[in-house]
Every structure is written in structure tokens, then in C-alpha cells.
Image (cartoon, rainbow, N blue to C red; front, top):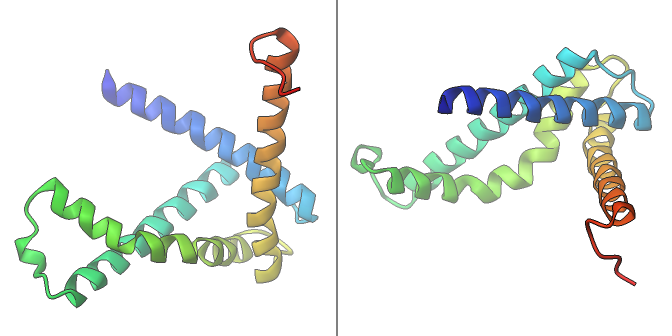
Length: 144
């Protein structure tokens, strides 16, 4: 039952991310991908960022003089990912732009960076619209 919930939640999350990606492509004037392909692109970007973070964590762990054979607990692997988290965060726009520039039509690397940035603008508008709806219905308090 838990696995079914995780799969359903991931599909809903990728559907929302795909809709945001399609809207961001339209905002930057790049031909937006089909809905399912947008979901797949979001999954590929997430996996690529995880791989970059993991490899940076392995490099940081080896650089600190810790053997990978000594990693036995979940906490050890969490510290490995924490070592690579900052590198993963810093490389996220460039990895995403590289994937977008190869997967989307008429999309250069610079436009891929703009698509990545436009995703935050679209997400902010969606959050603002949901918040305004909650205020209008009386579920949230207006800030003024």
C-alpha cells in the first residue's frame, strides 16, 4: 500500500512539474514538449542531478580520506550525499539547461537556462493564485 502511495504521489508530482515545464517553455518562446515527454524530462533532470550530487559526494568522501568500504549505515550514506549537496545545487541550472537544449526543439543552452529560470516564475504565479483563492474563500488571512 505504501508503494502504491509513493508511485501515485510521484506521478502527481511529475504531472505538476511537466505542466510547469510546458508553461515555462511557452514563456521563453521554446516549443513546449508534449505532456508525457515533459514529465519524462523532469524525471531525467531529477535523476541527472542526483547522479551529479552522488558523484560529488563520493569525490568529497574520498578527498576527506574516508574509504567507501567503511560506509555501512544509512547515516554514512546521508553524510556522503550531504557532502555533494552544495555541488549538486550549484550545477542544477547547467545540467537542466544541457538536458533541455538537447531534448527540446529550437532550444539553445542559453534558452535552456531561461527555461529553468522561468519554471520558478511559473511556480510562483501558481502558488500566488492558490493563495489568492484561499484568501478569497476565507481559508487564509489577507496580509493587510
